[in-house]
Every structure is written in structure tokens, then in C-alpha cells.
Length: 382
Picture 1 (cartoon, helix red, strand yellow):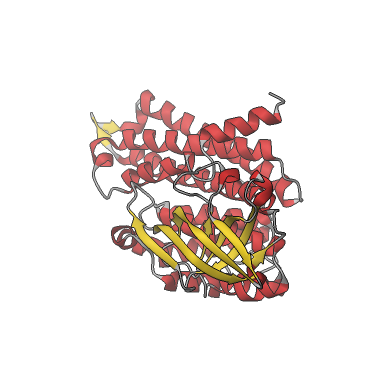
Picture 2: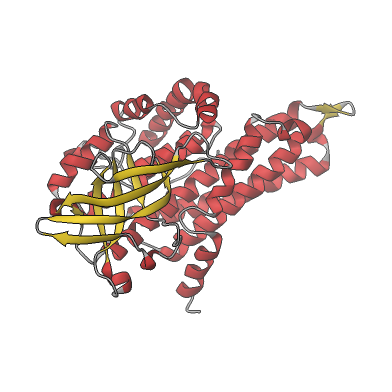
């Protein structure tokens, strides 16, 4: 990988540590986790013990006090395990469910939810998508009604990463009917509360080591102290969260594309056909050159946007561009890598085959390609 001016020696030392951890404690077990359809919770606690779940969070809440690029390094190195599911689950833990708690939560919520998540003692999930509403967050139907010092929540969520085993969910609800996006609020909902249930664990094409659920809430009561941020401001809060989610998704997509490219490059150098390595054929060598070029372009867009994000900006147009291009490049590269592997690449349990299946989600989750284009177009004044 090309050295970048965005990374310091401290960043590179962290990269070495995470790479060593992934090679020793994740990659050897990923086939088993994929087959089982989930990862062991012990690995989450292990990552918390090593400080990997709070790299950019303040020391005051149990974090390491690092910067945003440390989170990018974590996403990049986890991708080297050769599967998208486990890295995605950890991205939810670190960069999707917990940032809103840090940004909008009270000190009490930091202690009850954020600190245990950083330690790896509690698994977090983010509850946005509903059966009838995917990207249309403003139309959320899950309802929370105030009853004294409590809120009573009814509704359902689907496609929830970490859902089957989460200890709590950052839940998007409607607290004021008829107000559209101004009637949305967020709640921190513990999954052991009466009325909360996992209706089913979902079977996916890829990302299989990440367990995904459909959730049902029937008269679930939570204290007012579990309201996250301001009542009626949930839409703004979750839109802020989605920017970070999309950016870390871009980083993960580019990283897994890099991994697929490296595997294809190594295969092309060693696979013999017609008396020479297949990489010496111009059709293959030029394809690999184009793969490397597209990956680097997507990476630099992601890094440049991450730099602005790390300094407090929220450049939604560029974030959407990075997410859109990163996801498309990942799918394009994975498909070409499988082609270079030929028939062996199409065999079940080949790592390239698995990556090929996994990367397709990047063009859907966190906002589809079409949603990203809509955001970009609006930012262009169209």
C-alpha cells in the first residue's frame, strides 16, 4: 500500500499491532465463524481489552484518545481477515452505534452504554431500517409514547447487524406523529427489557460471520433517561451518524478491494499456463494495473474526505462520493479478481468467492448507490 501523509509513525505502529492481532486471532477462525453464522463474543471482549474498540474516543470514557485515522486503520486491517462480515459487525460497534452516544449522550449514558461497549462487555446495534421503510428514515413507524417518566415503544426493525445478540440498540423511533422528520427521536434500548424480542435471525448471501436480525418491540418500556439527544431531533442526530457510517464503509470497501487485488496479483505471479505465469499475459497484467489504479483513486478520495471529517467538517457530498465509489470499486475489483482465479475462484469456500459475495452489500447498506447519487446531485444544486 502506498504510504500516505495522513499517517504518522504512531499510526503505523498501531497498524502493525492490529495486523498481528488479525493474523493471529481472527483469520485462523474466520472460516468457522462464516460456517456458524456468527463470531464468538469473546473476540469482542478481546478487542476491548486491547483498546481497539475505543481508539478515537476520549480517555474520560474509556477510550484511547486517538484520532479518526486510527479508526480507518482498524477498518483497513480487519478487512485482511478475508471476509466482510466480522469487520462490518465491529464497524457497527465502533463507528455506527456508539458515535451518537458519545456526541449526544449524557454522562450517565456514557457510563451505562458507551464505556461498556468500548470495553467489549456490551455488544451494540443500530436500529434504523424497518420492513416498510429502508432509506426513508423520515417515514419511520416504530412509535415511542411518553408515559410519565417512561416511554412505551412499539414497532419492528429489520436487517439489524449484531441484532441477535446485542445488549442494547440505538433505536430510531417516532415520538410525534404527523411531524415527518421533526417527529423522530432516538432511544437507547436494552435488549433484555420485557417486550423486546428477536423474531428471526436472517440468512444472507454474504457477510455470513455477522449475525443479522429482525427485531420486534411490543410495549417495551424504557426510562426517560434513555432518550438519546433531544426529543424530536433524532432525524438530525441519525443523519449526522450516517455520515460517519458511510465514510467508514468507504474505507472498509476499499480495504477489502485491496485485499482481493493482492490475492489476485499473487495468484497471477504464480499460476502457470502455457509455460509461463498468467500475469505475464497482457490481458491479465493490464487488468491488474487498472485494479490498482482504481483502488488508489478511491483510497485517496476516502483519505482526503476523512481528513476533513476528522477536523470537524461534515462534507456530505464528498462522503457520499467516497462511499459510492468505494463500494463500486470493491465490487468491480472482486469480480475481476475472481475472473483471474478462474474456475478455482468460483469454488465454494475460496476466499475470493467469499469476498465477491460480501462486497455486494457495500452498494446497499448505509445508503444505496442511488441514494448517494441523489445526495451528490442535491449538493450540486440540482
